[in-house]
Image 1 (spheres, rainbow, N blue to C red):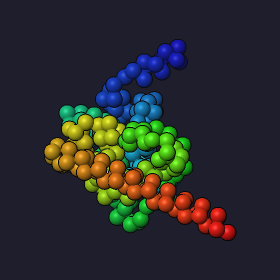
Image 2 (image 1 turned 180 degrees about the vertical axis):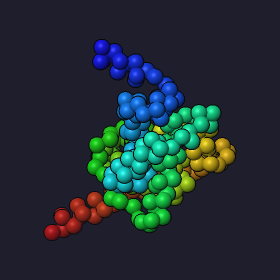
Image 3 (image 1 turned 90 degrees about the horizontal axis):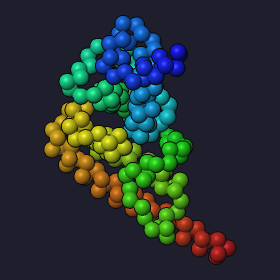
Image 4 (image 1 turned 135 degrees about the vertical axis):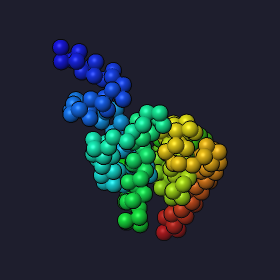
Length: 209
């Protein structure tokens, strides 16, 4: 019976769960949290570069969700609404700190494949290094490029949803995404070239000794 009830709750729509949550249903909040906390955390992590910041932002997003009744389903889905809250909190964090936290360990293995095409084996130092390069390159992008890359590429939101979250025209989303992709690809290529050059230099020094 418990499993059946849980399955029924999991199949409930976001809007229905929100209405139940606002009436004090803790199970409804738990289901919404299970649906979205990993995506919100990933977005915050890739935008901030720090797992501590991402965890704090994710917690704050869901705390605000409990107290906030401003979600309008006619303006988009709940996921976009949560990303919008996370974005505002991250922007506030950057204003307060003016620096990024350190990058986290490379446990999430699919991000490189999501954004960057495979290179020839001779060009690849290691998959883990590629993931570190990708994270560092995304972090280094200007905020307006980084946000559109994360929303459209990582979270696979359409232009309409991204435009709503970022509060910009759809055409601006397309333009920024195109420029962001080029900037990211250039940064990744430069990172590989720099690392290869350094490794060649290190090898030469070892031989010379």
